[in-house]
Length: 73
Image (cartoon, rainbow, N blue to C red; front, side, top):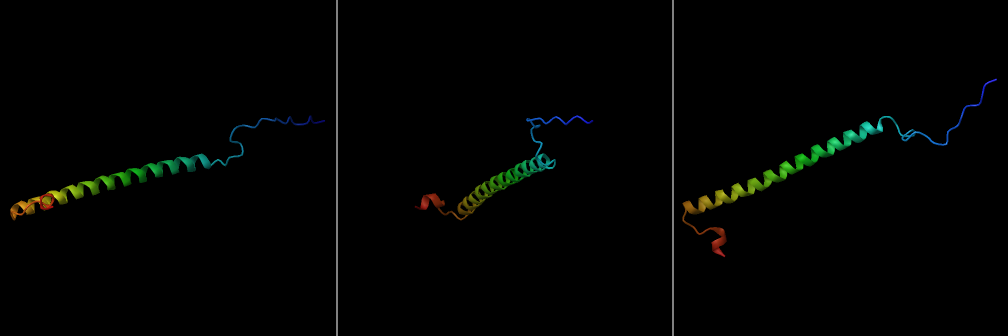
């Protein structure tokens, strides 16, 4: 006769978790990091663009001998 299978009350951790889930989580984390870095790069470029625009405005102001915008107030 066959002996009954032993039933363990303790299951392996993650036994009910699909096998693809850890891979999906890693992909999600990598995608989040990439999007965050891209957003940060765009933000920094926007700041640099404003600084360059301010310098260009000051240069035109000096060429035309007009007071700078902060001196007009």
